[in-house]
Length: 128
Image 1 (spheres, rainbow, N blue to C red):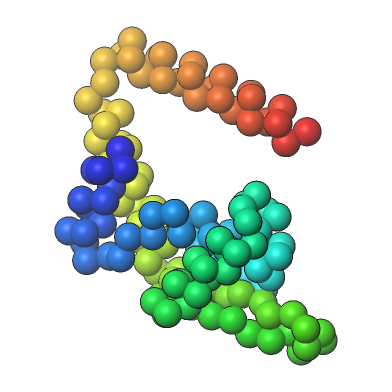
Image 2 (cartoon, rainbow, N blue to C red; image 1 turned 90 degrees about the horizontal axis):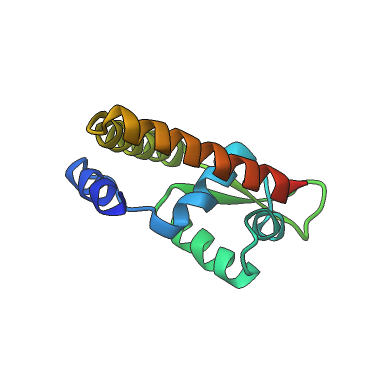
């Protein structure tokens, strides 16, 4: 799946987010999040998140802003380009997934659905 999505993102002229995608999505969903909060949310090392944030900032898809109420904090916000690229990437991913599912037999699709339900149960239990 990764190979198909990578090929399609390259064909569309989009940069590959790769491991940076969860960071970008979290910032889009929680504008103003700090690096510490982001690291906790994603269960990643702060140093790793900081490196990814720097990379995304240099690409112009994420920006850092000081917190007006607490000068010690730096908050992260997506840029318009970042939101647009993430939206385009998601559409490419959905399209690749739809193409893969379309080629399945009914029995394969039923097994996939059952597997996804089991995964959802496990992930839901992990959150609690």
